[in-house]
Image 1 (cartoon, rainbow, N blue to C red):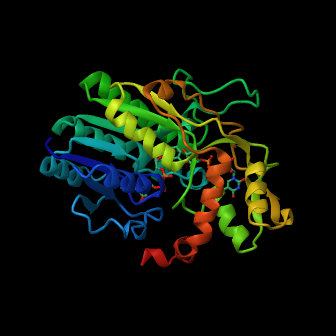
Image 2 (cartoon, rainbow, N blue to C red; image 1 turned 135 degrees about the vertical axis):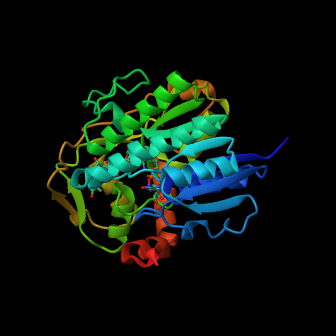
Length: 331
Ligand code: NAD
Ligand code: TDX
């Protein structure tokens, strides 16, 4: 079998970084190209173990740089594209929406143009359950692939826009694609601005833990390695043109998540500090993953096993998140 060329965008970030390592380890017959601009969220120290492998290549580039992306595609003729690169933090999208439109919408469009012009066997667009908007607290109702898109934040609106472009390039130009919509990920190398890594790092430093509003908002947590396996399956087995939701039925209120971390690390709940709520704060996300399960996917972590593994990882790898918090990683 001939070698395959796989382009992974955003492979210096959290999920893309875990996916790069997963693929490089699993497929020695794939040449993996990690394309990343190295924004504040990108960090290559996580790839020390694989950076010398023959089947791993890093390219520093901006997905919105049309000339650079077109010439790269002409030169490399990728078989597959898995697209993670994005501005990903909801709070930042409230203070600075413009960069979210540039990266998430225009950047995706540039990649789509390059993919359809040069031709790829599959374009997998990694999206989010946040494009469906919010659910109320009725535990019998979930997001399915048929739920209408009703994004509420500038971040989710930019992701929904990119989803629609991917869909349109399939319908109009026949681009082979899948869209995955995943619930909240957690696990190793999660940037410490997001709830779980922020809370773990602050508990370890005995600092106050900011909980927005009353802490009753619900997220559906998925271990990043289970997400990687889902994307692998969709890339190879997903029916072109289809959307797949990814989630593991692990709904928790934010307060439950924070208290679990505090108790696991043997600290006091007095660290919790209720702060002003996020603007437009979505109440609840919850995924129905039946369609992906029918394709053959099943999560291996429960929230209990996954959060225990994650807390242990952050405890044992303090030098990774400390260099992020100090800004040292930017050097
Ligand atoms: P992240 O912020 O950790 O990483 C994003 C990466 O993209 C960084 O390495 C950054 O340098 C890179 N990047 C940003 N702008 C770029 C540009 N213009 N050109 C090239 N690279 C650029 O994000 P993440 O949490 O790993 O999320 C990855 C993807 O998964 C995103 O598309 C996000 O919307 C989606 N997603 C995330 C979650 C989650 O819980 N984290 C859940 C569902 C979906
Ligand atoms: O300090 C905090 N305090 C707090 O109460 C932070 C950072 C968050 N929160 C709350 C807001 C959310 O209800 O915790 C919940 C999780 O917040 P984030 O970690 O910022 O994640 P969320 O906004 O749910 O979005 C994440 O999941 C979906 C990712 O960042 C997105 O990229 C993904 O699409």
